Image (cartoon, rainbow, N blue to C red):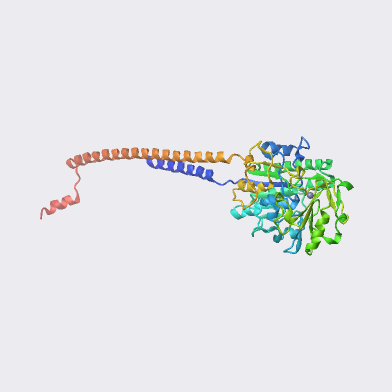
Length: 487
Ligand SMILES: [Zn+2]
C-alpha cells in the first residue's frame, strides 16, 4: 500500500514536470494587432502634451523616436503593401496608387473594389503577413480590415476575415468589428486595421493646420477606445499592438512659385500620366523611342524637380526593377507640386523622396513582447514584416527587412532562451533527484518486506511444528494410509 501511494505520487510529480517542460518549449502564442493611421507623420505625437493614449503607448512600450523610413514612392497603397510583405515596391509590384502594366495592358486603380480584389495586381511574389500567418499554422487565422491588398487571394490564400475599405463603418464600428474577430468562436490571432485619417485632413488643410491637430486628438481617443475594448475582452495583456503609418505629409503652397505646370513643357497629347502628385509617372502609349526622348528632354528643363528614365533612377530608391514603373518620373523637390491639364493642388502632399523627414511615419508598439520604455532612433518599414513574424513564431518569406534594429524594442529573447535552458537543466536534475529518492525508498521497502517475510516464515515453521506434535487434525490421506497399510 505504501509502495503504491509512493509510486502514484512520483507519477503525478513527473506529469507535473512534463507539463512545465511543455509550456517552456511551447511556441509564442501572443496575438498581433497592426494598426495604421494613414498619413500620420512621425512628429504629430509631439504636437500636444495631452495626447494621453499615444503617450501611454510610448511609456508602456517601445517606439522609434524619429519615426521610420518608408519606401519610394511615399504613397498609401505601395507603403501599406511594403509593411505587409517586407518588400520594396519594385519587388512586390504595387508601385503606385495608380499604375500601368504593359503585360496586362491595363491600368490599376487601387481604390476601386474590382482592382482591390484582383490577384493579378497583388500576387507578384510578395507574401503578406496574413498569408504567412495562415500558411504556416492551421490554427492561425488572419483578419484584414480595410488594409490594402487584404481582399485579394495571394499564393492561393485569402485572409480568414476581410472587410473592404468602403465598408461604410465609422472608426469605432471598425474597432468593434476587429475585436469581434479576435473574440469569435474561431478567433483570429492576427488583425490588421486601417484608418484613412489624418491623411484626408492633412491633404485638405495642410499638415500644420488646427484641423489636423484636432484629428490627432480624435485618433488619440480612438486609440483609447481600442484599449478599453481590448481590456473589456481580456485581450490587452496578451496582444502585441503595433501602431504605425504609411507616410508623412508636407505643406504644398498653392501659389504660382510652387506649382509646376507640365503643360508648359510637353504637349498634352504626347504622354500618358499614370501616377500623379507630387511625383508624376509618365508613359508613352503606344511606346515610341523618339517621342520618349523628346518628352524626357523637355521635362528635364523643369526647375525644382529631378527627372529620371526608369533605368537611371538611383539605386537607393529601390524603384527601377519592375515593368510597372513608368518610363519617366518627375520628382519635384519638397513643397513643389505638379499640375497638368489645369488640375488644382491641395494644401498637403506626400509621395516625395523617402529620405525627407516630412515623409516619415511614426511607429509605437506595446504588448507582452515589447520592452517598456525601449526606444530606437529609426528603422525601415520593411523591417515590420520580419518583426511580426518573430512575434507570431513564423518563418518569414524572403523579404528586404532586418531585425537588427527593431529587435532592440523586444524583451530580450536571448536572455529568456538561456532562462529556458536553465529551467530545462533544473527540471532534469529534479527528475534525477526524484528518481534517486524513489529507488532508495523502493530498496528500503523491498528490504523491509523481505525481513517481514522471513519473520513470518520462521513463525509458521515453529507453529506448524508445535501443531503436528499436539493437536494435529487427522487427514484423509492419513486414514487411507492407516486403512490400507503398506500393501
Ligand atoms: Zn494621401
